[in-house]
Length: 101
Image 1 (spheres, helix red, strand yellow):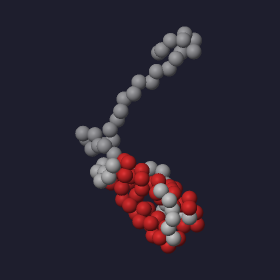
Image 2: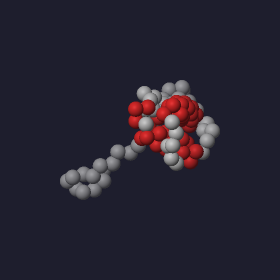
Image 3: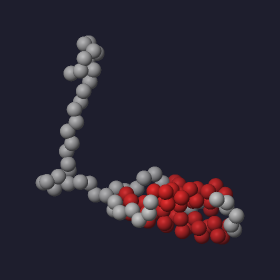
Image 4: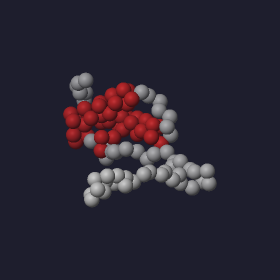
């Protein structure tokens, strides 16, 4: 996709993309209720990156390309309302016997 648009149009589109991507991040990560497909989301992020590359002086402080991840939904609660504990085996190789213990 080309970036044959004016600077004011690019600034406006970057603002719209930042808001749209933040909205879809929240729906996907915090509410587990996505509204668009992964391909549609990826297209928004690609367009944002393309515009930022063409107009680096227009990169917003809230740029989606500067963020990693999003807050996740509330932690699962155990039956007593506390945190859920997960049991995991800790296996190590004994350096003296070369076997599992």
